[in-house]
Image (cartoon, rainbow, N blue to C red; front, side):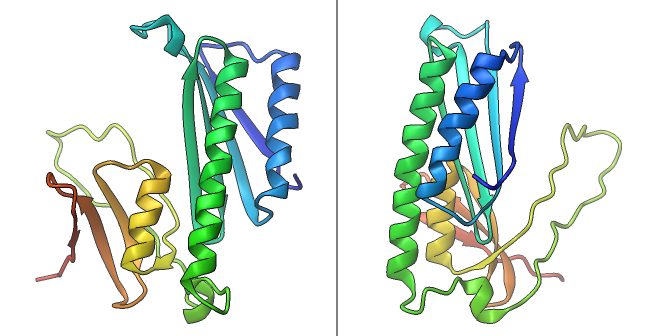
Length: 190
């Protein structure tokens, strides 16, 4: 893979053997998806997991123009967790490529079709009483509502997904309702 593979560990020593194993396996994803800009692998050991088979966690995140794909798997050994996460990522890549191929006949992403810059996440200042434990910045890619639902599923987000609606040129929040359907919040400044 021409992309640098970033490997991060938590509660775990990254041995040369494990590092080589991860790099070799992740590089093979290039034959499935070649437009990856960033690849991140998070390996962790959770000693407080209830089940001993869930203590080794491997999470793989691929970022590219117009997509973010993430897979996470747990196992009793780090090597099997990495293998399971890679299998799940291959399935997600096939699903993503299939959806994209069926979406537009010309093969363009919405970002290419409307050719606009990426808006940044808006940070909100808060009072002193609530504690903000984390701030996260991410690039918003213009997409339609169906693509937002698919991206939400691919990322494994269960509650909500923020996106820039290419059809309305507005920021929207997609959320999953209790009955399994989806809702969209359209913010307005008043």
